[in-house]
Length: 115
Image 1 (cartoon, rainbow, N blue to C red):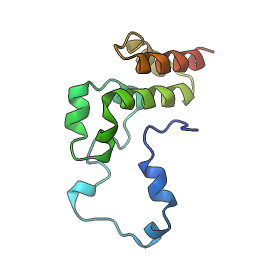
Image 2 (image 1 turned 90 degrees about the vertical axis):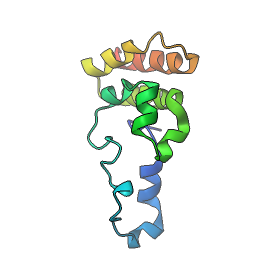
Image 3 (image 1 turned 45 degrees about the vertical axis):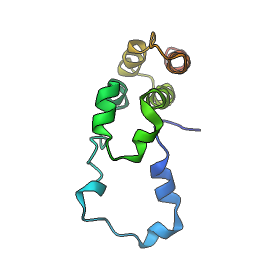
């Protein structure tokens, strides 16, 4: 059900009936490009280290999930994405990750990408 998304806030914002009256904020803290996520590929986001994750997402709600679950979500998104060499390469780079959670989801995603 996650599709190729990695975090649910965007869906909540789109579905919230109160947002039909919302205006774009003028504060840079709320800019879409603030965290470098706008237009980033899943493979590039999957390459972030824990230190880079913490630094790039400081002040963002996304940081609450932590780097391990970030990688899990991106692995699922990569598994659901169209088959590509970039996706397979990114997934293989984390195949031996220390986290069993990440390894499990990378294996699942690789099976889908290599099918």
